[in-house]
Amino acid sequence: MSDPRGKSRFLTIMLVPEDGREARTFRLSYRLLRTLTGLAALVALGLTLVAGSWWYLAARASRVTELQHQVQTLQAEGTRIQELSRQLNGMEQEYARIRGLFGATPSDVPSDVWLPPADGTGRTRATDTRNLAKASAPSSWPLTERGFVTQGLETGTKGDHPGLDIAVPTDSYVRAAGAGTVVDVGEDPVYGRFVVIDHGDGYTSLYGHASLTLVTPGEQVRQDEVIAMSGSTGRSTAPHLHFEILKDGKPVDPLTLVHQP
View 1: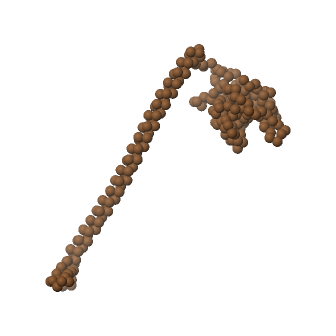
View 2: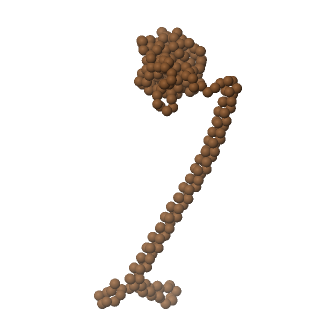
């Protein structure tokens, strides 16, 4: 940049020492100052980029360490699962051997208990026509094991109890006491998870405190078909099944219709 007379403009810097030595004068052209300022800006930008890159690399390195720890944890869990699988296979083989010693053989003969199929293709055995979809009054014990009756039917008292409480381990099979149609499945503050079946002729049955229900409203179930797994949901202090039978909406003592094994 030039002045009106065509000469370059300069910035003069004079340094005057206090000890009386000769003063020094520096002349810098504005063009040089602009160049130096640009270089300084570039250096500052470079330093900023370097600092940013260092922070990014440090964060990535920390993430890599975390991922390595997760991989080690998963590998340890995988090893534990493999060991559990090996133990389970060994137990199954030992169980099969013991069954063989007692003359037990794998059973594909229809039993008195129907389990819901795992493939979801249907809830009945095509090779067995017993109790198929035909409603029947409840007459079977609602469990695959005996259990222990801890409370029976109580009516007309302050603490009415309209059915049986049967102590049984959690996740025991709960089965339909008679063939019929599932009319209600849900969860209640008192009964917990429950199933209600209409058996026709005014009979209904209720199964409460289940840990898992295996049927849906509208399904037809056979007598002895597994409909739930026992538990301790709702107002319950220990695993058990609450079993009710009603005739025209009124409680009936289940032990007058079903026999405890």
